Each structure stands twice: as C-alpha cells, then as structure tokens.
Length: 205
Image (cartoon, rainbow, N blue to C red; front, side, top):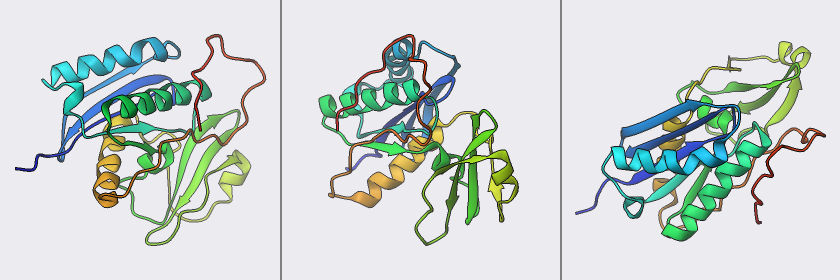
C-alpha cells in the first residue's frame, strides 16, 4: 500500500535553526532554536534528534524541504548545502521554498509578502492568485509605504519549518515523475563587505 510521503524540512536563513517532519498532512515533530550563529554545527544533530523523536530514520524520507531565503547569506548557504547533500546521499528530491512564499502560505492572494531586511529595508514579493508572481525585490521603508494592496509581514511567521514542509509536499505531489530542480539560494541583497567569521559552505551550480 502507498504510504504518506515523509518530508523533512529545515531553515537557517535567519537567527534560528528550525526543522519539521511532515507525514502526510501531519507535522509529527518539530524543533525551533533561536541562534545568531552556530547553525552549521547545530543543524545535523538537530535533524537527527528530530527523526529519532518521531521514530524515523534517514532512509524513511521521501523528500527534503529547505528554506532558500532571502535572509542571512551564511545561514542560507548552510541549509541549502545540507539539503543538496542529503538529497544526493538519500536519492530523494530536495525542494527549495522561499521565506516570502512560506510566510504567505495561508494568506488570501494577491498579497505583498514582506520580510525584514534590516537597515530600513524589507524583502518584498507580490504573490498573485492564478498568475505568475512578481520577482522578489529589496525595498526601502519609504517605498513600502507606497505599496497598494494587502500585505503580510514583515515578521508574521516565527517558525517557517512546518510551512516549508507543507509547501514542499504540495510541490512534490504536483511534480509527479518530473525531476525537481535542485534548490538554490535566493539572494536579493548584496553581501556585506565584512566576511563572515566562519566560511560558508560552497554551493555548486
């Protein structure tokens, strides 16, 4: 008998390390830890703890869902690199989900999805209903004040992992036998001039 797809989703695109395990339509386990740094060391142990808590193993997974940003450069690269590595080793698809899309998952569209980008700016995307979404962009607070239409954010979603898992499940079902493109980081703002203290993992094309 076919089983409910088991999807492991995680996100380190902001000051957190978040993960969720989705079986069918049920979140069977989730973890969220605030952290400004250290996600590279914490992510894999957290994922192992999550699987153990729900009595599953890596080989039970049908897909990986991963937050691709926008957000912290190093954090995005950590989670995307981990998702690609896991997908390759487990021979399952990895599905990238943007924070802007996840935040507006349950919102009525069309809607502006806004995420704090700091320094008086926000990441913004206009998400449509039944039509292609606009490209994500970086807007100043002055530009945001001129936006017309409904909006959500800029800090509407505390824990993105469960929603990333649900979106990944929908995309997995919609893809059928069609191969799913590998996740890639969603960078909107250029990197800060100062390099990170710890080098970020390299993302291959």
